[in-house]
Image (cartoon, rainbow, N blue to C red; front, side, top):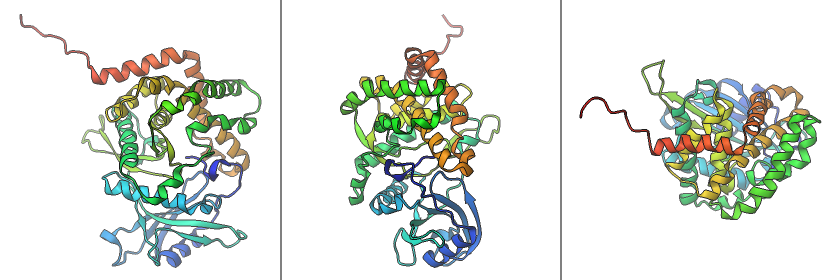
Length: 382
C-alpha cells in the first residue's frame, strides 16, 4: 500500500480503465475470455480480480488472476517491473506463496499498452495468478501470526539477497525512492500536507532524529534486498486449525512487490512491526513478537537493534505524510489512502509518549522470552 513514482508521489499517473476496457485488454494481450471482472483496491496502480473461461493452455487449469495495470510513471521503468516480477517467480520456485505471471500471447511476462482516452500515456500490464486467503487486516491477530510474519520477512529477504541473481536486479538500487526507509529525510518536501498541528511536531522530531541518529549508522547495517511493504493488506493468511476459537494461521500469499529495493535487513523488520501495530489491540507489544520471528532467521546486531525505534517511527512518518499528500491529489481515493492513518497517528503518538527506552524494553523482553522461555513451575516431588 504505497506510492511508486520513483520517489515523486506528486505525479498524477494512476490508470482509470473501466471493467469492459480491462476485459478487452485481457483478451487482446493474453488471449483469454473474461467471464467475470471486479476492481481491487490499490494505491497508485489499478488492479482487477479476473475470472476467465478455462482454456486448455492454462497451467493446472488456473482460471483466476489479478490484472495489474502499473501507473504510467513506473511503467517507464520496465527493468524495475521486470526485476519485481522475476523476484516473484524466483520466490514462488523457492516455496514462498507469491504470484506468478501468466505469459502474454507473445510469450512475455508483461506488455506496455496504451489506454484509450488517456492521451499518450502507456501502462505496463501483467496478469498474475490469484492468491487465496484473507488479508491480515481482516483477522483477529495474535502473537503467533506476528511471529510468523517476522520469520517470513527475514526468510524472504535472505532468499532474495543470497540467491536472486537476475540481471534486472540492478534496477533495485532506487536512489531517491520515497518509500525506501533510508529516504525518511526526503519527507521534508511533503510535510506541508499535514497542515499545522501537534502531529506535525512529532513527525518533524522523527525526521530530525532520523537524520542525526540513523543516517550516520546505515553503513554498519547489513545490506539486502527488501520487499519493502509487508503490510497488513499485502500478507494473506489462512487458518490451518479446526478450532475457530483458537485459529492457527499460516501465510498463504505475499502481495505487491512494487516497493522492492536494496536496503537493509533491519528495514524489513521495522516495516513489518509498524504495519502489524496498526492491527493490534496491544500495539506496543507487537514489535517483540515480530522481532522474535525475524531473529529466528536473521539475528540483529546491537547497532541494528538500537536503530529499531526510529526506523519504526520513520515508517509511520512515511506512511502518514505520503498518505496525506496523496489524498490531496486523489480525493476520490481518500478513504483507501487514509486507512493506515486512522490508527497510525495514535500509535506513533503513543510510542513517543511512552518513550524509546520503555518501548525497546518491551520489544526486547518479549523477543527474549521466545529464546529463554520461563521454566515450568515445579509440581510436587522432592
